[in-house]
Amino acid sequence: MIPRRVIAETGGFDPALSAAEDWDMWIRIAYRYPVARLELPLTMVYEMEDSMSRNRPKQYANDIKVIAKWNPTSPKTFDRDRRLRPAYYYRQVFSFAWLRGMRLYRYGGTKCVAEFLRQLDEAISLPALYRTPLHLYFKLLPKK
Image (cartoon, rainbow, N blue to C red; front, top):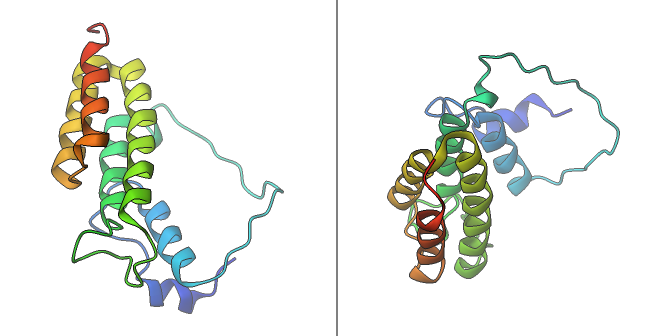
């Protein structure tokens, strides 16, 4: 449950996102307000064959846009208080990209992963320490 004024104060859903808009909103809310985690499931999720959550490439492209908003080295960062250290942020982006890349490889093969990495490079300038292992690993996987 969340007060309507909190949603309004944090900007609500970002209309520029065609997926991950809920995740984006919850991150902005959690940045400004205390949140609690309940272990009790309160909702049920039904996935249909053509649901957005099954379109991994599109979902992950929007995930990149959400993560890029918090880049502490960007002058437009949502991290107004500069809570995120760049090294921490880049490690999190690396972990995100690694996991999404593996899922995309299983989902659509090397072309799918290559497009994902291109979008990631375009949105977030990862230092070579993180960018190089990602690109090398996914290039070495068997073509599918």
